[in-house]
Image (tube, rainbow, N blue to C red; front, side):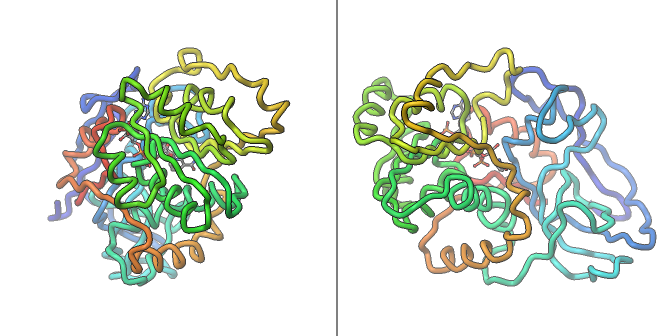
Length: 336
Ligand SMILES: NC(=O)c1ccc[n+]([C@@H]2O[C@H](COP(=O)([O-])OP(=O)(O)OC[C@H]3O[C@@H](n4cnc5c(N)ncnc54)[C@H](OP(=O)(O)O)[C@@H]3O)[C@@H](O)[C@H]2O)c1
């Protein structure tokens, strides 16, 4: 979109249950004129992040809920096309936010320049962006992961899970096992990403497979799924195990009252377990060093990733809604 016009996706109504494309509306509007201290970004890639769902219903989340009519502020990468801001120049690539073809920014909030690390731009809205950093700091800081440990990762074929599992393996885990939906995702995790094993939670004998794989217990559970997933793993955690609450993709469509409970809490006492959530932006100052190291691993082929690229802003609501039915396989991005 150009000729002074831009498009954006707004929340049409607060969402009840699983999102559908009808919960969103595409709007066309004039690109605002820049004021002093502002810059104009043309977004190139916009991502679908399950965590965005937690802001699309009324009620508490770690970020305030969006009001109907507000633009959805998911993550994006783009190019500065005009600047009246002292720190940004036209032509620079940036990571920021906005389900929109264009964004006017005052330079505050989540906006960072994309360094040239010899990788495709889309990765800065994926494995080198929020999902990759969640995997990195979830393991390093929250789990305090150590070489030799046994790591269980859920929603393992997603960008956070696949990255967390591969990093744990590279950093010396004795066993990394993923849980994912379907044989194709499980095959990719073992054959391409080097997981020791992957369990298909949709298989009829999953609970038996899980029990067998868990015979030696887990030092770290990196959980992206939610309460039922944590509850299942609590009895098979090892002494002093750590549970990283990264996300709750199975629970985001529930109200807190509807979400499953966690019952096996007795395990926390006997095994001295620790469970801790993270908001990845707490680690923002440390992102550049982690991104540089991770980009090196990607260039060397030591960390794999998958992308699913949709074209045009209008495809965003359906692409986002598909995250919650297991349709996605890798980072879902919209090429603007
Ligand atoms: N804490 C933070 O700062 C932070 C930052 C970024 C992301 N996160 C969280 O990290 C998690 C992973 O994010 P991601 O971007 O990598 O997305 P993702 O894991 O690719 O999420 C989509 C996938 O979730 C799985 N899923 C959907 N419904 C499910 C259900 N009911 N039970 C089990 N699995 C289900 C599906 O895969 P299957 O086919 O395997 O079911 C689907 O393809 C999310 O929960 C996200 O909110 C946290």
